[in-house]
Length: 440
Ligand SMILES: Nc1ncnc2c1ncn2[C@@H]1O[C@H](COP(=O)(O)OP(=O)(O)OP(=O)(O)O)[C@@H](O)[C@H]1O
Ligand SMILES: [Mg+2]
Image (cartoon, helix red, strand yellow):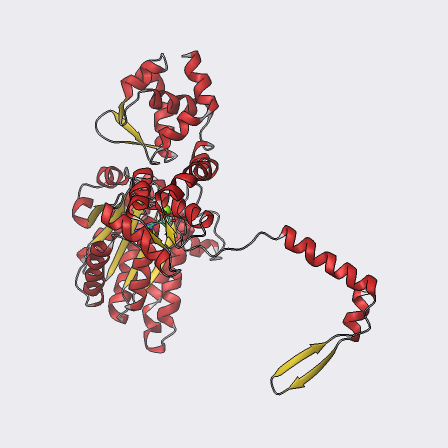
């Protein structure tokens, strides 16, 4: 039936607008079926309500609160880069969900507006950094070679990229080389090879007037040898005064990782730790997105949100999203927030917290339980060992494993904390933890 309707439909065109006219001799049965479909669709289809809050990894909030100073600072650095003034690189560190990714994404947008060549790299535990940086280098050369007068500038960096890939990315099939060529390009020194890539790209950037900024997220997952080579390469490029910089982000442990690799990294990078928002900044993060919808919050409602979220950007987005979804009034009051707190924690438990928890092996989980049992965080490794009825050396492998998975990080000497804010509250809600406590 429906088919015959489609076949009978005809088009009446008028200028660029066209209308579709259907048959009018529809039977009662057809009409009944169609109406039933609509009713079922209405029943199944959830009502869509626009929501201005955006909880989620790397999701740009409607209003990026409290980062103006950092943005202005880095804009100055970009300005210097475009003027060929040697510029340090910048590294942001902070706990999960404080807004590192959205900050560097915002910076990338600003850099692109200044016609800086930008590329974003997200380091993953399993991903190969060398192939990623090589691809970024190639993309830069493609952009440069688009202009005829710069075509002569690309051979040297292209050769350097070729040597890097051929020597250190065995899975790559980008460059098919003869045996003799392979011998020519083969290198055994990663640092030297990456330095050649950076300095030759830097020279090309300088001569073509196209500065370069690589945005590298989740730096804590970089392999030590790759990180050491990256710092050395950047250092040499900086010494030569070429306009290349890195804007990076990662968990708090990256400061130690970078300075551990090369002592001079402290001069090469500006470090900025970012954390939860102040009360004033949190207020803006809460109020500004809703304003567009004519929705306001009472002071008490804001205070309640602040006390639940402690100013963590991700938690603010998540709680406000739930409150906004549940309330149909123009003024959101503290009782509305209260009514949504349970749903907020449930949402975090099945998403934000659970994905981290599920990355833990059994031994990791026990270690995490023992940390929570310490009561106060950060906690001493000796207390964790005591709660596990083990000695410190026997739990050091699990400790290292959890650090490398990005679940915990060393705070001070022999002290540990979670990279995920409020993680211990989540653990305390788990039946598994409660059962473990009974046994211990
Ligand atoms: N300054 C801010 N103002 C308002 N909301 C923010 C701000 N920064 C981040 N957010 C929100 O917080 C959430 C987390 O941001 P983002 O993914 O950038 O955090 P992150 O620090 O990179 O976390 P992770 O370490 O897990 O990668 C997003 O929903 C984002 O919209
Ligand atoms: Mg991130």
